[in-house]
Image (cartoon, rainbow, N blue to C red; front, top):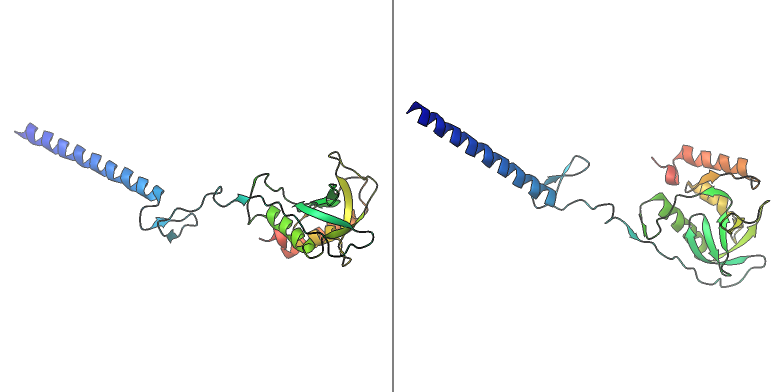
Length: 204
């Protein structure tokens, strides 16, 4: 009789353990699927049942960023057809221009993070060119890079140099490659000031 009671207790205990495991597994599955009314967010706070967006969901298709023709062509300036990324432009004649002395974060080939520094640098350049998309190009010692892009300092119609503005705003780092180093010291100072002030990509 004692053995039967012990066997019954063991069976009851085993059943309880199995039920606890099944409930736990079901709970984890519901939590991960976002079906529970509350769940722990990645920042440690409780939120609603909707799952947090993934990195893939947070991206958007890379925009083409074509610009209109300038309303009035200025002497010595070249029209810009498209902003490729923060430091690379496509001119109206098809020439690709790589800005000397600056280096923006790489933009995704097909998808971009709209909150990332690469996209914000690109849109910053686009906003500067949108109203009057033409630039006066100035060259250093070497005219082309290994990708046959034209290397240049680019000045907006209002006289501001685009290379400087990218560094001042904090959307670019410096990239000094000899022999095109005419403004290297000045550019490094602008970068350091932007980083110390937490501007652009240097924020936080």
